[in-house]
Picture 1 (cartoon, rainbow, N blue to C red):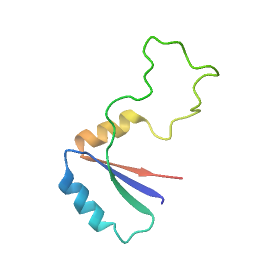
Picture 2: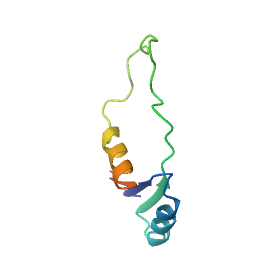
Picture 3: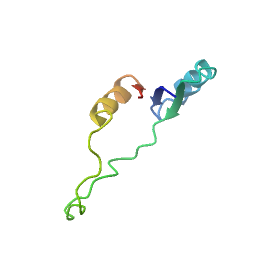
Length: 79
């Protein structure tokens, strides 16, 4: 898989449409947004020993959230 469509949970019709359109494309996957908030928030707790394991973000989460809220989907090129 080289391309990913992430579709807003508020647009199930768009999800179904894109799933049908790209069903025969082996390098494209269409998924519903499953985020429910920031999972990595640690609040006032002490930092993890050894620091954060993530070196770099693959894509800025603010970009994804913005695209999902304005377009109803985000397109991500992987690899």
